[in-house]
Image 1 (spheres, one colour):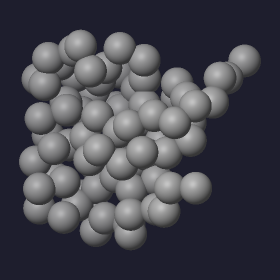
Image 2: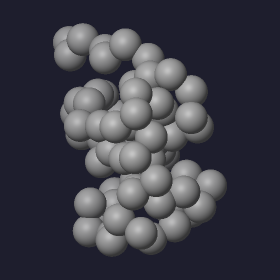
Image 3: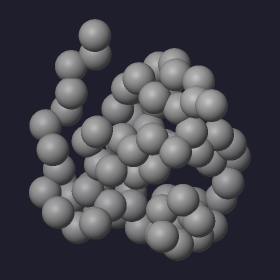
Length: 77
């Protein structure tokens, strides 16, 4: 069972309606409860072993976690 709420992406700060195992609509990072407490160099099992540091480096370059151009920031509704 999923519980939906407004969550904030650990990587890009985008707020979206979602819960555990949902992907950020902007950078594709898969949200997991407690990720904010993990160190930036911890390989994320939910994100194919990518670290938050790697994803944040991609974001700083205008890329999503896969290295593709970022999607437009969604409007909060």
